[in-house]
Image 1 (cartoon, rainbow, N blue to C red):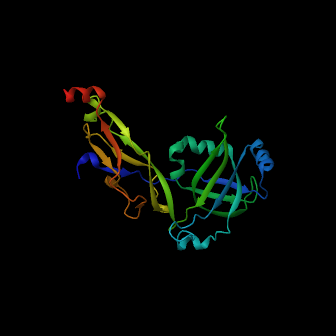
Image 2: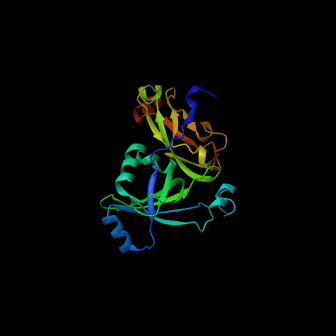
Image 3: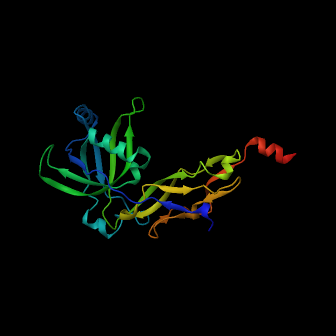
Length: 235
């Protein structure tokens, strides 16, 4: 495998412990009240196994599907986490979660690692309306859309010749053990010339990860020639 095709999965990192409290009631009025108090409504549950519809792995048996929690989180803390993690990588990063009896309470009702899978925002203001998490206990397998980032654009031979990078895929979906979820995939294009590509199969990830694609030969990116180069080569 040539150097330019070497891609890596970034190391897994944990950030702040998310603090949450139970939410007994649901509905638009209750959610609006929570938001007015500086809190964000959220839910956490066990993701189903993609193959058989059961909870994803034996580790999840400690958390039955019925252990679905309606929660609220602190808006300031979530905003702080988003600044640290950066939004594109939020839904591919696991976090410790602590569910306490109430705001400021020392009574811990439940804890564990979670993976954010969805952020609902207000279309006009961009403010976060709701958060959705799944339990990400060790040994649990989860479907994750992992963001793809590119490095080496400043030294890429094809780009220096006037080509441009066609980012064909911005994420790749994997079935991942929770303890091996990569926040991002780093694709090195520093040796890519005009017309060359990087393919899904070139991505180097932990052996426990399974790419959820029927065709691994699909390209992730390609250095495209400019229209001027095409016209000159045709003459």
